Length: 95
Image (cartoon, rainbow, N blue to C red; front, side, top):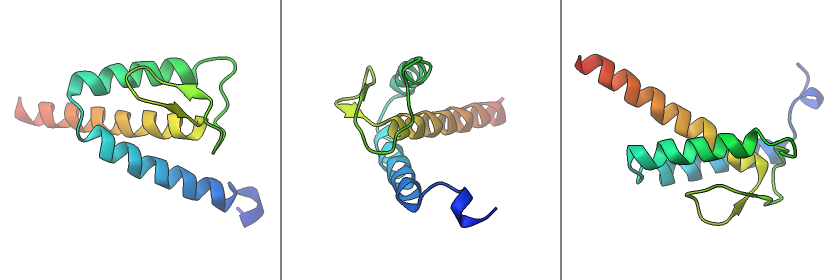
């Protein structure tokens, strides 16, 4: 794939920054909070009007302060899904 066919560099940097930010935030949350925020973020992303824009802060997510861009919401979902997958794997190893 040529460079011109990939996401613009500014989007890639924003996506990375959002993932780092949400990882730092989610590490401080309880499992219940991560699950409820994940459900809320998925509801926002499922909206017909949702756009994964990199910078415009259009979306509120229940359980999280402020407004967020679509790319930030998507990064939040991916981070929380990774936490959930890690917790599931950890629990499976203990049984």
